[in-house]
Amino acid sequence: MDDRTAYLLNGLVERHYDIGRVLRFRKIKRGRQAECFEILTVGQQEFLLLLFPAVFNAAQLQYTGDLTARLGAAGFPVPKTIHASSPDTGWLAAGPQGSHLMLSTQPQGQPLEAGAWSSQNLSHLGLRLAWLHKLLGQQRPSTAVTSMDLARQLQNLLENPAPGREGVMAALKTQQLQQLTTQLADISVECTHCWHGALTPEAILLDADHQITSILDWGYCQAGMAYEDVVDVFLNWCVDHDGQIRSPEAQTFLQAYFSLQNTNGPSWHSAVVLWTGHRLIAALSGRAGLPRGFATILENPHFLSAAITICQSKL
Image (cartoon, rainbow, N blue to C red; front, side, top):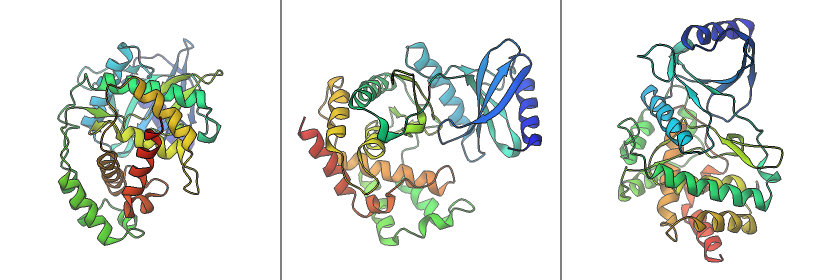
């Protein structure tokens, strides 16, 4: 980050948020969705500044601020979001080139690579995610996040991808993209619940004892099937880079998760198809890249749904 950008962002923070004079302002890595900056004030308070690109919807980010505030009030480990000083601004402030600024207290802890997570860590993650989904089930999505006509959204983006995102489709087969659109149109999901939408090792912070202290990356939070979060965990923590399923890790996570759920689980095929649609829409709109192994999942979603089903059946 050049000095001019740091100076500009520092000035915007001091203009839009009542946190006092900034002593230290430096870029750090926290999650994947936004550029993140650590702030230390004269009063020795620490904050985390999130700089979301312009492709993120401002209304959805405002809802994210409301939602995480409610989750924090319920005791769930999320950073405390800070209101901007203007009463009309809400949680966001305008950043450079149409970007969005969001400020929170500095979350404690450090991310841990997926391969370094122990069985106890994964069990803790399963319990935390089950708790999160119970809390999200009590929240009604705003109109900013309730658009569930994924087939139409995807078709529009396939015909008109965001500038610079045309190459996303280059490695994907046209027939499989159309099949996904058809599958999405056949799945009926009520848009009354939210899901986190981006659970990755970078988005979860742990303390020195490997206890989860904070969950980040809420910019993709949207209406949908909560079990899509389980698909994220399965892929990011329970599948090796060569595609091999780590069944013991998957079973540990699933056992903990379903110990707090009053159901045996959804149709995993529906969850995988919806996850695939959401991930492709995010990539075509310019908000994210395609996940690892996406082309293989698009070609054969039944393999992934069957793998999760088999792991669950062994509990």
